[in-house]
Amino acid sequence: MHFLDQAKIYLRAGSGGPGAVSFRREKYIEYGGPDGGNGGRGGDVVLEAIAGLNTLIDFRYAQHFKAQRGGHGMGKDRTGKSAPDLVIPVPVGTQVLDEDRETVLADFTEPGQRVVLLEGGMGGRGNASYKTSTNRAPRNHQPGITGEELWVWLRLKLLADAGLVGLPNAGKSTFINQVSNTRAKVGDYAFTTLVPSLGVVQHRDREFVVADIPGLIEGAAEGAGIGDRFLGHIERCRVLIHLVDISDKDPAEAMRIVEDELSAYGAGLDEKPRLIALNKIDLADAELAEGFAAELRAAGAEQVFPISGATGAGMSALMDAVISHLPARTATETKTVESEEEPAADGESWSPLD
Image (cartoon, rainbow, N blue to C red; front, top):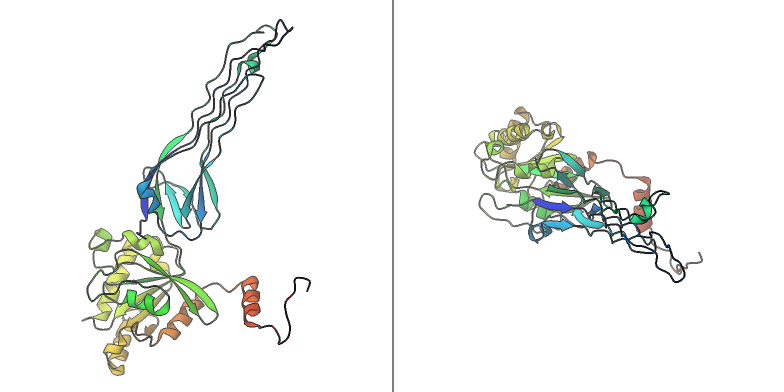
């Protein structure tokens, strides 16, 4: 599936149906009077967050969404049928922006969240509603109110517990393949990762999501390389895992470059908890790895985790540190885990009557 995290779409709510001009016609009734009904209401445009979606690729092939208009009013005081709402599914983490790309109209953070973005127009009045004691045969009616319309931008920010950052070729794809069931592309060249990817990590009795974004280079905030376009996908992460390549000429300088780009981007990334992981220790001896770790601590890293994305060395301690930054498991989750871990006693069978 192709990844797309930005899309511009056109939305239009349904217009109200026109009211009817009609007069009662029945045998033996000489003056029937007006009986034109009102028009139906137009459909609303509703956006709903759906679990399981992680791309806006569907909006590349369909950019115009128009709700149905309300039904016409009819004789015998019959009101037109109201149009159904147009429900547009979007991934969890989607933001809806005005055409200026700055004003946030809606922010979807939970599955099932629904927002009525545009309201359908009201139906027009039929001539029966204009009847008065002095105007007994009105021919007035309303055509129905036109539905609202709007161009909006959809911007996806993936929801993850931990985010991977680092220079290109720091081993982020190998890392996420090691700790999760993801199969990200790995190559011995820069910018192997061109789009963000998600991986679900199961460590001890916890499960959390890790987001891998393309590598950053110096000047990314000004558009160098792939730029900082994908940094929005880690804005909502609880903790950042900063991978530093031990085979780099100057690991401390490599760490500084990425930290400077995070600060230049803003959005609170420079304030998030940071776990510095000295990667690829399988390529160096223990003494050299400890020396580089000391340099990183001297450069400002509070704690350094020597790891190897290829062999999995040191991963357990790093994952424990990630879990320490996650919220405590709720009572419902604890009960679910305990029920899964307790097998039924021998000879006992489950019954719906138990």
